[in-house]
Length: 215
Ligand code: MP5
Image 1 (cartoon, protein in one colour):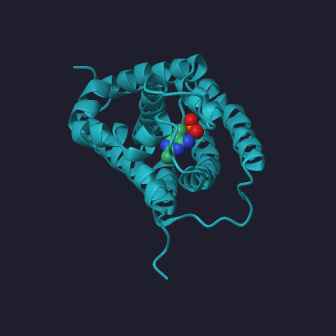
Image 2 (cartoon, rainbow, N blue to C red):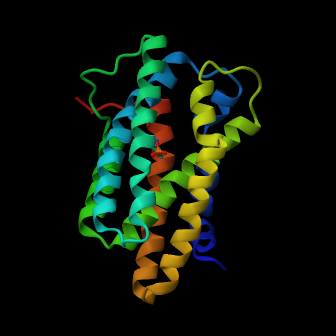
Image 3 (spheres, rainbow, N blue to C red):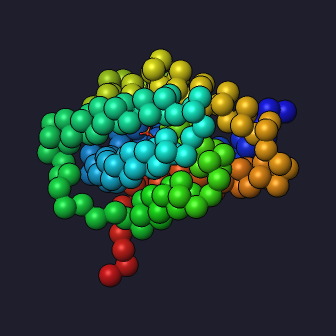
């Protein structure tokens, strides 16, 4: 079994819960309330900004042959942030003075802590897990889309050809990295994937429920 299949197999239950989350189902059925979608848009905007710093740290730690491709993700994320800004302006959703909800905050801290304190291979596994989660989630939306969504540009961003090629590269590369490491590091890499899968599920849950700090 390839390493990425091992990861997906171990996280199977949470991956299925993520892909069948009501946020995604209601988005596909074009009946997600605007205010609920806006929760996701605001929090994901903050998440992606954290993601830029995560990838920048990863570039600094990457072996030479992986650094250029990883670095190419940074302008792609900047373009993505512009998409968030464009859609937010169109739908009158505020992007200034936002507060990270608890789950978004914890997930971004997990990204940054892993990038700085864990091995490069573990951090790369996190990146693969987060991107694979979005590919599988948004592709599910695209495959079940029941009409013209007001949120179409987001659906296309993460279910289109360019993103597919990026996730394919991450998948091949994470498998290659896992071939070279000790059994204990390989096992820590699957732990990171498992945690990432849980954060991804919780991110939909956070947006759907409109999670806030208690007080
Ligand atoms: C991604 C994202 C995909 N935007 N948000 C979450 C919660 N998980 C994964 O990352 P990217 O860098 O926007 O493709």
